[in-house]
Length: 319
Image 1 (cartoon, one colour):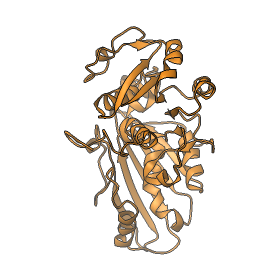
Image 2 (image 1 turned 180 degrees about the vertical axis):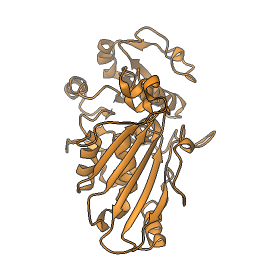
Image 3 (image 1 turned 45 degrees about the horizontal axis):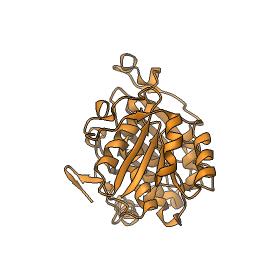
């Protein structure tokens, strides 16, 4: 058994990760920290967690992390550095998986989008988990990156769980009712993240919708040379052959069908007359494949388990 600690687990993603680790055959949840929930039973706030584990303070977590195999940082952006510094000083060989954007641009960290980057993993102990939108964008774009004639334009819509638990307009149910809320229409951190990872400029326009979870990402792509729809779909099929958490569909996927599922669906492949413009749609659950499931894939990789160990591939089944 490998022991895991989670620092900053009050949010939606933290709850999903607690459930996944608790059900994993080779992982043991050693501690979970939350300033707001300190002293409370984890089972009282995370449905499906049966063990009598209680949230500890962040200070207590700093001490407890000395005795675990891996630490997951589930903190807001800009808050990870002190914990990384403490772990670097005490146990540089300990695995860290950071869910924030703090180290996604740091070349000393492994960027953990397994379907695209696992061949670059060489035992790194510092792992940056990709952003939810960034995961959907990269999976939607990667098979055609070398064929693009212009920056891809990506229109994204997320459920309001992506805005976290701190109150804001973007997770205010009353303001979102019958609404679609655009924000950060240029320069979003995930726009910069994808541009960095794919090595080309990407245009991204995010929106928040009234549903709780799930991302729809619609990518408008201009190609250098005309292609047929069949050739485009075959390109995606070859790129993602054998990937259990990527499923290709003929029609544009629906976000309602991806909620609470661990895979990404890619489809649509709508081709305009002339064969040089194609529209691809990707959907995923922002809390799972966009965050917690991907973190579990990265933990598995770093700790020597099968990459999909503990990941439910269909209802009621897991590797």
